Length: 175
Image (tube, rainbow, N blue to C red; front, side, top):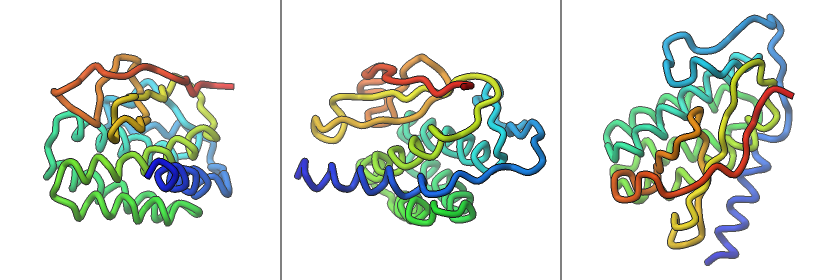
């Protein structure tokens, strides 16, 4: 089981890591209406939008609101589908959007997170930091990573059950 899970993570990491598209306008493209990502500025407007929508999805998982998770995942699916190379990741977001079971949504979120992490590691961060966080207990002890724009741990894999379980394992910042 761990071997299959590892292969799935590896495939997800490679999916969005094909071509780093550059924004041609060079303007500040942070989502103005995404308060949680206000301090993080990414040059590529599409990546900025993906981050804001991913954070919204993560926050709904923290709240353990399956219906809100579905809506957030559907929005993220559209943005991922419009980013060249992220079509497989959009399919994973689509699975989350179709599933009403919170445990299943969280399982798909592991694969989605691995892919979005890989995508944003190549982002041109202009300001702020994105934190890669890890819960060793997620996925029956296999662990699970996620992104946050806040250093404080808010675990999307367990919500209120283990809200602060996890640690920051990496920071993605201006190079």
